[in-house]
Image (cartoon, rainbow, N blue to C red; front, side, top):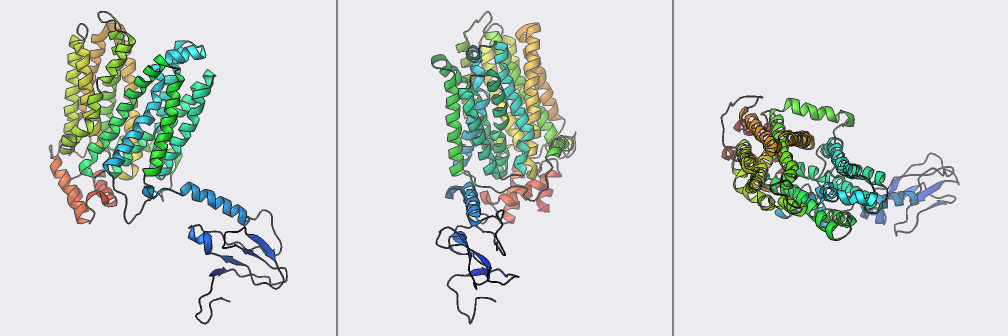
Length: 557
């Protein structure tokens, strides 16, 4: 019978658990509300088993299982001590600072500070992939292996990264992003410790592969920013992350070279360990616990590669952007791979230190990327920005190829124009593809990045081969061909085209796109940065329109 009688409020509300056996040997499970140890008590004539659901357990938000032990004690039954320990671990794992808690009624705004934090995290996680490239000779000396074998460390790191893109990044569409990203960073940072200490080259190489596979945090940050940034600021917000990636590559090589010149090469790995835990701490404090995008989806991990390939085969905009990224990456890696051969040969014969400084030429361009993204790319149709970038890039390759063999100004101009044009192209293409299937943005990003990575490998291999056959002019001609083909890919499909080829709808105008999105958000009562869920609905309209939002898409909202 209930203990609530005559309308009186009991002193401690308890949940009644009926018993089917009433004897003097009945037992009850009682949880002490004062926080003391729970215990099993067997007394004659006591009341049926009762579980207190209030007290400390309820106030901490932990729901304890209601268990009644009858007619004897089974040692396999979870005791209150076991349950309490498990709940404490769960509470500790899921606890988060106040700034990181997610309130669905008042979701956190995507601020400039958060954008910079994500850019900082991307910079110093992608650096993991490039520390080794400047110290391969030192690694060969320490482990007493040939330089060719030591260079396999860099190859394994990149191969691991490619594996992570395919096997880990798509999971961002399923798992909550905060614990997923923090878990990857903590795992990589812990796995990084043996790289600082091991004296076995096979172990060093194997762990490098694993660290490369889990260093995919930046590729999880980019789709997250695509989700959170307002459409009117998406390009400039993505530019901060892309700039962080580019700076990470430059800083890693520069810092590694400097530290290896004056101290032990291991110190750059100790630096990498410290900065990874710093990134973890900052994200743990400030990164909101955004919910999963597909919490109820039945996900088949083994079908993931097929789904990614299917995206490329069914989304014209994604394929167009991926091909442009492939060709741009080929231009970029072909130049930087063959540049060291050119500058170390007559008539230049520069030292390795001077050649390394060429990598700093594009720093100003990279740092300024968010500024011109906000002023230019955010105001134009993404395809227009991509074409502008490719024109600048191709002109730079023409200038560098024409005069680079006898005047160092050629490679300098080429470096600046490749970086500038490349930033325009990459940011514009990424901004456009994040309007495709908002619930699958990590898989969309994976498809884009895998094709782009293939372009890097192609540019390195083809550039080296052509340089060996005909020198700087031959490798430069390959870059010009890549740039020209990329422009053709852009021009065969217009920004409003729904199919694979054509220009239906003409150029349109980015001002129209922004008006459509803003009106849709305002009409749904979710303007500005708070309308994330409604904005996803607006983005969904682009799925059936080749990734381009139109007034028709707006009306459907």
